[in-house]
Length: 237
Ligand SMILES: C[S@@+](CC[C@H](N)C(=O)[O-])C[C@H]1O[C@@H](n2cnc3c(N)ncnc32)[C@H](O)[C@@H]1O
Image 1: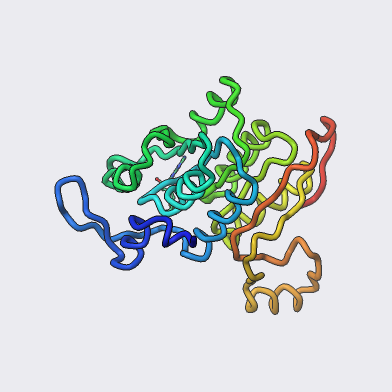
Image 2: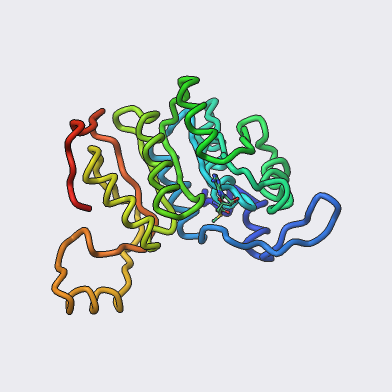
């Protein structure tokens, strides 16, 4: 079954562009990942079958429902931990309401703190996701912080995916990650999309490097080994 067949709550949210809030008010859904990215996330969870998934950035819960639908379909005891400090106020608890409407609360834990507080604590507790999805605050420092801690939590073979890879800051953070850790990019059935206009300017400026080519689709990386560079290492990114 497809993601939308598997998740009627998600289907309705995407069809209407709205959710019903806790007091019956209609709320316009925004900031969500696109359906193609949600489907890729769903497929990737089905393919790698992680027992524990971590998500940074929940909003109204499109990515959350995609992950939970896959865990439910896998049928074992898989669970998802979502970090989002603004869920109750800014997002009207919409993501949590959706999880509850889908009947998936038993598989879900929400941490209402910023990533920079929650991630070090989860690491200290020995939290070990098999897959993580980053869609939080998209500046370079926050994205790198997410990647830094997720790398410490993932085992070899673990997978990390990111949304909004076309943002310059996310692109740079990925380049740092790939040049300072050992991961390989994996194909999850998404077409390669990049900014053609930027490509033209970049090439006119004499930059033909692969790392300068800013890909815009969701990107996923598999951990190849537990590795960190020596203290004096630096690779340009
Ligand atoms: C683009 S939205 C996420 C959309 C969601 N993944 C979906 O598919 O519907 C970004 C989310 O990141 C959350 N966020 C912002 N700063 C954060 C931080 N420091 N740590 C964790 N989450 C953060 C926001 O509250 C928001 O819910």
